[in-house]
Image 1: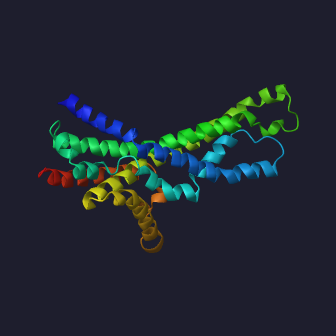
Image 2: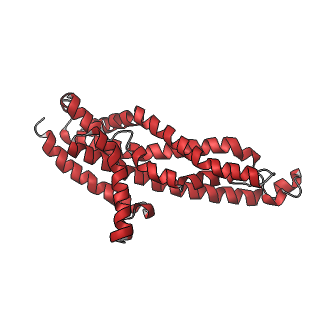
Image 3: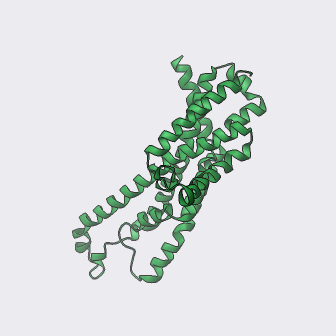
Length: 261
């Protein structure tokens, strides 16, 4: 039974992470970060005739992750890989074949885990690809500010420890921000998944995370200034708790819906 359960979960994860929505989401993140970084790159070129400082390739990605453009669209992107899976299975009749090979509990578990995981992973993957591209373009051109006056090989090696500290600090900041987005992506994908299942509407799966995200912001900024409901300040614990709550709600709803299948 445990093997069958693991197979069900792994099968759903495979479907989610190899879907067109997943690859479209990764591409969208790379493009958004690229466009959000253009201003930083052009500004660096115009302001300074010398090469960029050490850690520049990290800083432009970090700035992009905090930009309004990225904050606006990441809930939608997290919904792309697998939020319509339940609705699709119900509408195309695939659910009957699927349930003949597994249990309702395993089906629900597989869908929830795959949807949440792919919603977070699409953000993590897109950021990692963007960071790789940024490093390939700029890392080799960066130099420690202390070397601007004397660009000798000896001076460069003397400042390597300081440069390494800057890179480590920048990478740590991005890693923290990425994992915050990862767990937020889990939650927002499950929001789309749950509301799509309730309405049996694929369109709702994609737009509801965006709408709900901004509803919470408006409620916080205008009516109820409680930090726990403000998604811009969420870290790891808030999306995790809310994701578990959605999982429980969906399980209760799906069991009733699948009882007649």
